[in-house]
Amino acid sequence: QVQLVESGGGLVQAGGSLRLSCVASGSSFRTNAMGWYRQGPGKQRELVAVISRGGSTNYADSVKGRFTISRDNAKNTVFLQMNSLKPEDTGVYYCNAGPSIWAMGDYWGQGTPVTVSS
Image 1 (cartoon, rainbow, N blue to C red):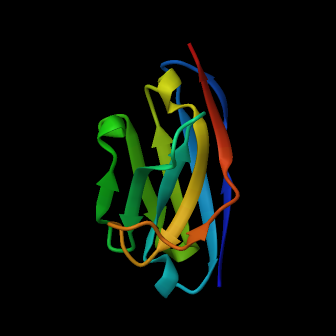
Image 2 (image 1 turned 90 degrees about the vertical axis):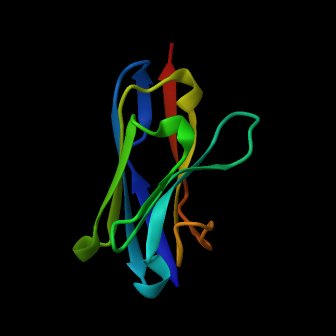
């Protein structure tokens, strides 16, 4: 079993920055890929960025060049540095863990809200 605990969401003005963190506990095999998905108001949940234990990444086109994902394997923690935030980045951000960066994993955090005001 894997438990994911997120932190770092909040309210920020457009152009600002936020940093999200997610700590995983449980099987390291099941946390080979860790990352973030988000769900905006009235939208489906979508990929933001995912990173493997070896450092391979997968980003949504909409965040490339603005968001950076990283992880500390020793602490089983993944970070999402979000810069140049836009109102369309508003949503609930969910930490996710699984075996591959190319597929949604089975494990989810409780979600942390991010609101970007214009």
